[in-house]
Length: 242
Image 1 (cartoon, rainbow, N blue to C red):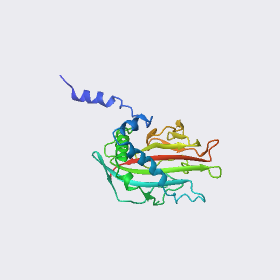
Image 2: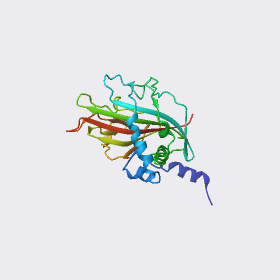
Image 3: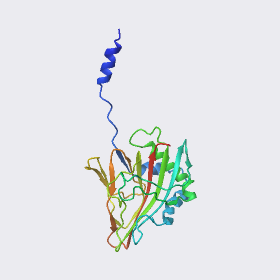
Image 4: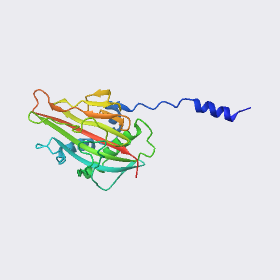
């Protein structure tokens, strides 16, 4: 004989399953495997597109050190649906430096936005989010280059330790040459460091739950013997459709 009320009480006392860790740090193999079926020339063209990023006009720096493009997509089945180009906006509560300002960045080049590489990368990252992905069907894609010289340090995160205001954020290293610093660090919501890494191998990736951890990147400067340091990143923000 079953006793539904008793069974319900026992079920109510069972502890909830633990939440997955709020981030994952992947080596290059994750995305290397995802791109294995794509022609090498398409992958080379994708990474070379970082050479054609315009300066970020919203930094207010006399000498530009950050260059970027931006685009938005709906993740539809096995493909990406490009959405109309709009300004990038963050609330001041999550970005005390640039929040509250509609920042218009140059759009992604058509060959990047419509090419097979971006679609494969975004779909793979979405499959490896550190939490539920149901309903998380929009994404913002940022191509960012930060440079440093003897005269000008590069600041990958001029806003310091922050959140982006999305559900999940993926950080993919594309290129790192002649760089000291630029250490990625994650913090719990109390401000305690929980993970540090200097992304060094192309396609090395951190995927984080932006609601459960803060993140920042230390300033960078040229390595000894290098006149210029370059760090290219692909950032993908995942958020619900609306």
